[in-house]
Image (cartoon, rainbow, N blue to C red; front, top):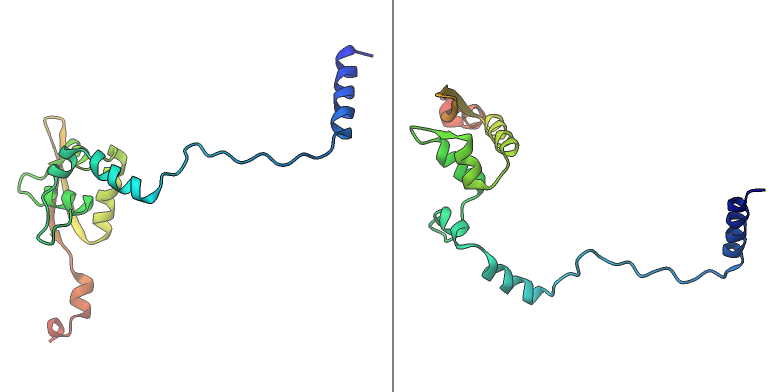
Length: 139
């Protein structure tokens, strides 16, 4: 018989004879912070350029990232993928998915490639659903 097999069998018998122990305490990768400390440190840790990048709305809240992208796209010159990525902090594939989401919401988007750079623009928003549900428009 091989000595490795003998040692393995002996180890298996030893483990069968040991009484069951308490389960180990589950450790988390990062301990959660108390609510009070996390709110104040998060506000202090927010980079100023990220908050200054998007203008505040009249109510004092920041616009959503998709609203910022829509603002870029409604400009006459439109926006490149790199510009949208820079403003939102999204990856390029996420930004393209957001453009698809805008199309599904009824925005008509165009894209043109000039000098190897693709520029996206919003032409108009189709309000077919709003027109169908508006009784004044039907008359």
